[in-house]
Image (cartoon, rainbow, N blue to C red):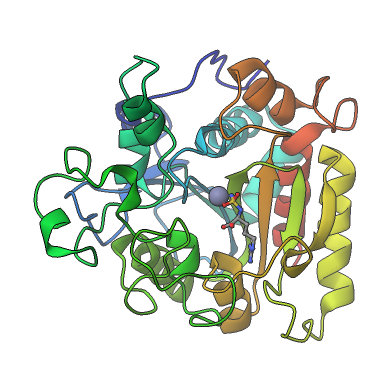
Length: 335
Ligand code: 0X9
Ligand code: ZN
């Protein structure tokens, strides 16, 4: 049912291969590229751009961005993003609505933003012991520099501090950085980092958003079946275009069956992706929290059902995330 036909969670090397392969098989339509900053462990972050005459980036079109896996254990986020890339390519080739929408926009997909963390989580040894849980449930990146000296050496995975080390990429953006809902403790799962944009992962997204006309952005997470918009903290006023922003969120939520609400209504956060991107650029940004109760549930429910809108997903019969992403694309096509 997925555009790629996939039935199991991808590994990091499969994402990298597939991104290059999509570009190789679709010259002029799909371009593969890497973001400017390699990660703490030296990995490149792979991305795709999909547009008519993709290499001519000076055609004045709005850019629609879909990205996944700021948080390592949130595997469905990467799957939904890469399936969207397949969706656009297939839809473009077969004509009709998607071809028209792709023709009016530029589409950037970054399935795995936090490649170091994802690699640790995805490759955790299937032994069922504490260590496996520890690694498989890693959330943050692999910045070891802010932890105590004893924990600063060795690769991220091998080090005795396990998943405790690292910065939360979704607390490291400049959006209200230093405010509520982020920790100053290196070992916390919501550690904000030493400064705004101290991490290569967030600098990558900053570079993209501040050099391209990103009018529309969705960052994918798991779980709770939510469509979240700014502001992330209760003490920040809603934006002046809140009615329009809310209407777009509500429309997408009517497709995936999620709850549409400002992020602060979930809990306070600062340093999140769209709290920076929206207030810095004015482009609409949303966080989707995919799934009901697990960070990476079985593929059938966590990915296939939620993407395509099949029971038991809350968007069953309403189009699912596929249709919600299409609504975002339609908004970008007609800014
Ligand atoms: O806490 C988070 O970063 C997100 N939830 S998760 O379980 N995926 O970690 C929610 C962030 C919501 N806040 C904003 N988007 N501002
Ligand atoms: Zn998350």
